[in-house]
Image (cartoon, rainbow, N blue to C red; front, side, top):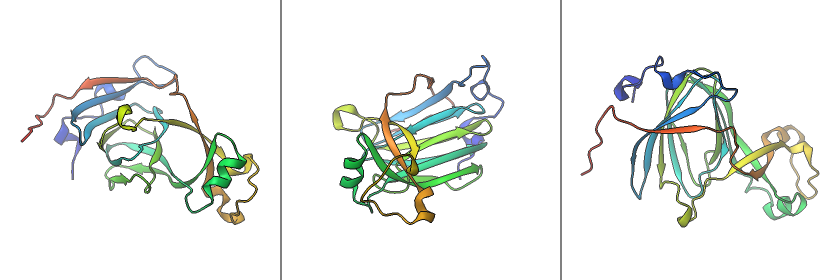
Length: 201
């Protein structure tokens, strides 16, 4: 498996500390490579930094936690329920099913998100300083309809949902998502990765 030292990363690098003591720590994205078919980079998060809930439309995402502990919460749209009912009853909100809501500590298995399965919408919260290798295929592209949307989440019980039948014990597994503007608190500094060479054949 890929290790932090393979990529020249160490937890004591400045990317992983909140030097300016911001309420919302800045995140560094080390850009490795991008072409029409995929993009690759490393997110470096100081403790308590958060990548807010966002989607990956029509994309497959491979994420590998290189070191540290991170809380991951991911969702898929609730396609097994009548989506037209959920959207009609609650304007601008859509029902989603929670796929993952847990802490992960490296070394651990990579996560793979598919366009319609595996938790296509997710948020990352750094419990400790951590680094995540992210591969997106194909990459975000507004002209091609792959726009990154951000969401707020609300408990299922917050809104009436006539016509949707969910067993009481399963209601905790569903939340309403509402699209929002990119959060102003999100600060991502993009730098070029320079530790190893990517060779294009």
